[in-house]
Length: 198
Image 1: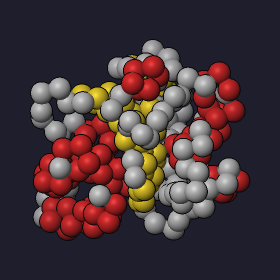
Image 2: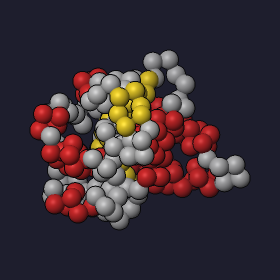
Image 3: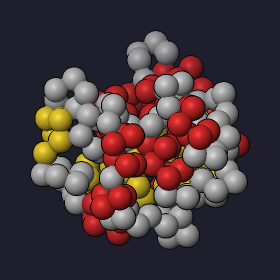
């Protein structure tokens, strides 16, 4: 089971790395989570440099793909050569997008007729792409999910785990990372956000 987190130049660390950490809580043979990028190294919006663990082609072949966000997403969607490499298919993959990553799914016509979540900055661009934006942190329809707000990446990660490994695995992963003294509150909130879409 390979889950690829698409991570582009100018990426938001919270989106890619929180999801990477939570998704990696599943300890099962064959379960693999990787940062997939168009280059060998990508620099975050705050200057953190990551080495890619997978290519865009690897991501297109993955069982699940989470599209992270960043400050250069509009440049990504304007790059026809780059976008043509993103052959994502919800009939064979789980797809999720965080904040401006939703714009990438919209431009790939993967949100046709499906309302989505995104951050407040990206909202007008997603709407301009013809996608209705909801005022909530998470939504999913079929094999496609979107989330809005950096810290909603926990909901995307939990949804991926619940769909791929089961609800108890998702609860366990969120419980592990939740603050001490607030674990049940966090687990309850996360599961309440994703349960209607499982």
